[in-house]
Image (cartoon, rainbow, N blue to C red; front, side):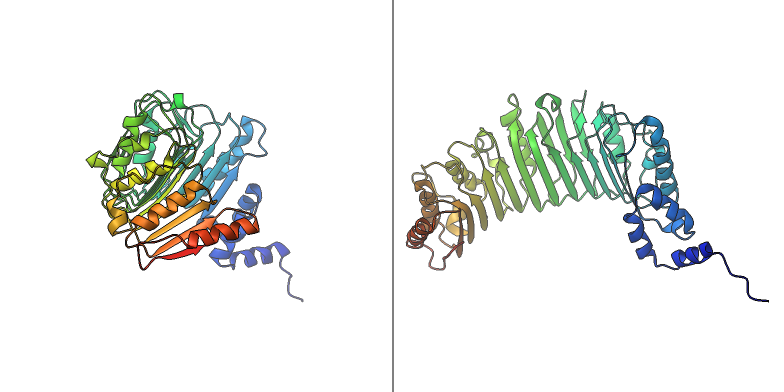
Length: 402
């Protein structure tokens, strides 16, 4: 008698189960949600080794359709899932599964929700192995839910909050002693929704990014480990702007590298230049951009008095005005600045005044890099020759024009 032929499905199962874990997970990441779950059911080994799961509600019509989605999420979490991303575009979404906030295997949690209702965080929330948390477009009716969520992440290292609303609170607290990266973006949050003080206590923080409005107030504690900060201000809370801006800068004064962008008709960031608490002793690299700021060149030079040990300066010349010659010379220019990069060079009188100011006063400057804006060939050549003829007081200074 001939050997009995095995069903074809058995061979398929064997081939799936024999694939390496990395290849299985990679294949599943490209499948639609339903097919990924079906495939993981076929593979007995993949029931344990599914690492990443991304789900959206693009084809969900009503609330009942979320039940299968939540079932898949819960099933994946119960099998040791490490990374999950949820992107729900509908405004009416049922409460997320409790297991999402009590998983012991999750390492990365990304929530992108458009719901207008309060984000519900269970009282027993505990994510002991979560290191990366990203929250986008969430609404919190009080400070307890967000505080509970963050405090439940016992080993959290990376926290990102994009355009989340916090209603009916007087203070937003972010306290975590292991946090290394913190990104806060309030670019699309209304001024009236930002009437609270932000308190941050993160002694292990090395990277801090803040974008949007300057709010009611800031208490930034224990940021002695901070290496790099990126601050981009689009507008100000009119009532508290000057005090709040000072508090924000004071909190990051230990930073080594600072990217500062001001995109508003406001001089608040520069009014406190003489405050001794705002000296950035550790700052060696400053990148400065400002748009629609009155006398921004003057404000920049004034701000340089707060960075006595600066070595690298990066800036643009857009929308600048004259008036630099009578200003006191910052000590960093005289003794420490070795490289300056300037973009937006257009051949204007202001551009030549700014470049001349640095060439005259940066006594240990080694390289000046100039990036010109698009000009006609003859004009560009004429400006280039004029730039290269400018006198320089540093014998080591090399001028490079792009």
